[in-house]
Length: 226
Ligand code: DC
Image 1 (cartoon, rainbow, N blue to C red):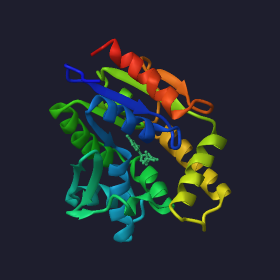
Image 2 (cartoon, protein in one colour):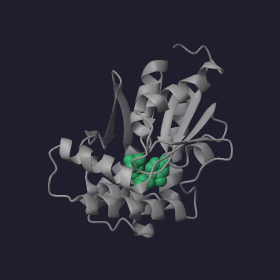
Image 3 (cartoon, helix red, strand yellow):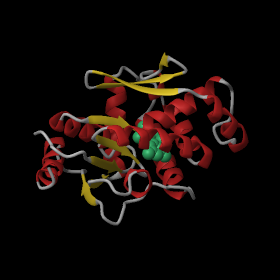
């Protein structure tokens, strides 16, 4: 499906709700760019961890963010993310970085810099952007806003299975569930641009929906717009 207009689709929701799978699928169908904004916060966290900076330390993080160079590039449909010119796309997927990303994302100075980058990309081309605050803060005028949810059990199960597929066997289901619970709380309770459903977002509970069903629902909405 081609869209003649410049559009922006915001997909928000908690970890494991299916945002990236759905966003990738929709961007492929529409032949537009997919931007995974979580990868940006993960990259900041990776830099902090490497430099032994506590990811909860606002003062140090607001200095670190001034000398970080994050670049997003596309190799075909694949988004690659660079930290100071090093491709860190795979290195940012560890449990330690997940928690760190949720921590650094609380810090306003970090968010302001990331949001600047995100808006720059949306300015240039049509995008499907996934995150926590895309519909409420980053792109308040997005063409379509989706808020994905799923039960905590189901979300933890998805993340756990993803890890097993990657060959990670030293993290238990309970650890994965605890990490998700920590992030849910941290991401929704922060003062600046928390995880929240925009008033005009369509909420879809993906607990018992298939990926195709969710994508179909979103594409039906888009058909009416393009
Ligand atoms: O989507 P993800 O799991 O890769 O995101 C990692 C963390 O980054 C998440 O726990 C909170 C933060 N994040 C955010 O605060 N705002 C976004 N738009 C995207 C991610």
